[in-house]
Image (cartoon, rainbow, N blue to C red; front, side, top):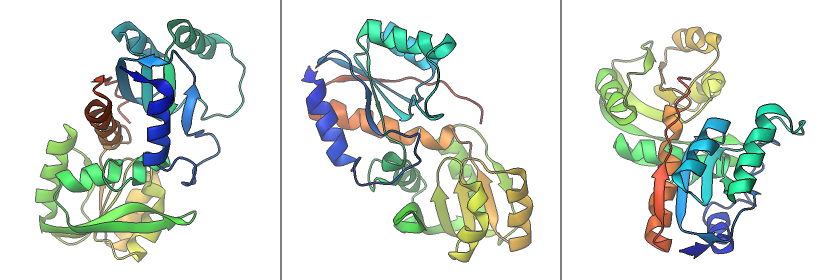
Length: 251
């Protein structure tokens, strides 16, 4: 058992919640207060109503997510939003969110987790965004097909691939989630094969014309690693029971 305030303080520091920039609706950190004594933690990609319901039913005291409850800014607390808030508050379920801070963490971040499982050589941060480096780049010693096989094994599903570049994977850039629209800037950064979650339709044709391989692994699937790593970290540090709530969107 651990105290909610202690867990929040630890995560705020570890993830540099106050220092890392993000989108206005992210509202990183503790989004909803709950009971102070925490024995069980649930982690998930999204703080959706089905996920909150599963967390409550599992007996979790704290839900940690990558995409929080307030992406659309101020909104009426009616319908599904009301039901979600009411369900969490009546159960004493606290909700903590970490978006970009969890993407870029050098060890437990979404990018770092993928770079590790893909065994990229000499991984280092790249791609400047709002004064930080948003992704990770490194060399993959093997063909594009071998890289795609490794991605498939890591994510559990075969990604969508634009094989417009070299047959060798070369320098691989990873920006999890929805970074496909950055295809031009990524190519200009010297990337041969770009792994992201999703992108707009035109990002595929742009990659073709730029002669860059592009791997669309799915927004959801590329961002499960970070919350799982947070669960492992909290289990080790606070001796808490943790659970990953898998609620894929197919996107």
